[in-house]
Length: 279
Ligand SMILES: [Zn+2]
Image (tube, rainbow, N blue to C red):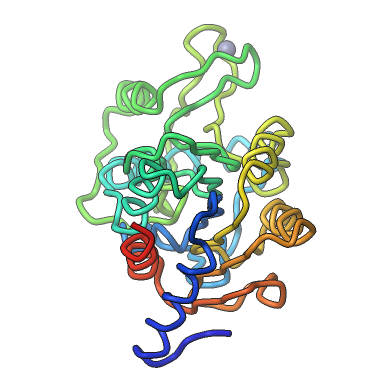
C-alpha cells in the first residue's frame, strides 16, 4: 500500500514502525537517499545526465574515454567531497547506535553513510574515496590522485558551480592536452574503486551483503528503484525468508509487489519519522 495524504502517510509510517519493532533491520540504499545532499540520481530512471555511460570495456580500451573520465571526475571531485550527510543518513546511523539497524548495504559511492556515523556499511558498488592500480593493485586515496592531476595539468581550473552526477563527475567541455594520473609505484593504469557499467559486484562484497541480511529480520529499501540486479537479488533473499520488506522510494520499484509497505516519499523525511517512533 502507498500513502498519499499527510494523514495517510503518518498512519503508514506508524504501521511500518510497528512492523519493525523489536527487529534487527538491514538497509539497502540507493541514489535517492543522497539527492537531498545535492547528489542527483542517475542510476535510477530519473535525471540521468549523460546519454553515454562509461563502461568498463570503454574505460580499458579507449585513451580518450579515460581522459574524459578523469577530467570530469577531477572537475566534480571537490564539490562531491563537500556534500554532507542529510537527515536520512543521520537517522540510520542513530538507529544503528540504538540497536535497531544491523547495517547498511549501499549502492552509492559517495561515502555519506560512513560520514554520517554508520559503522557497518557495505559499499557494494565501491567508493570514490579510493583509486586502484589495475596492474599492481596499489590502493590510493582519491585526494592524493587529485594532487597528482593538478601537478600534471597545472592549467586546470575547478569551476565554482558544477552539475554533478552521483559518481561525482561532470561532463567536461574539452580534454585537450589532459594527462591522466598513473600509479606512482608501477606507472600502471588507475581506476576509481567503483563498479562501472559492465562490471560485476565483487563476490566478497555481495557475500558480505548477504550475510548482513541473514543476520537481520527486516529489510528497508531506501531510495533505490532496484534497477541494478544485485539489489533485486538481495530483496529476493529477504522475500524467501518472509521477513518484513519496506520500500521507501519516490518512484515505483521492481520489488513493490513483494513489499509489506511501500512509501512513495523522500527518505530524509520518512527515515527520521520511523526512528522517532522506534526510539
Ligand atoms: Zn601500480
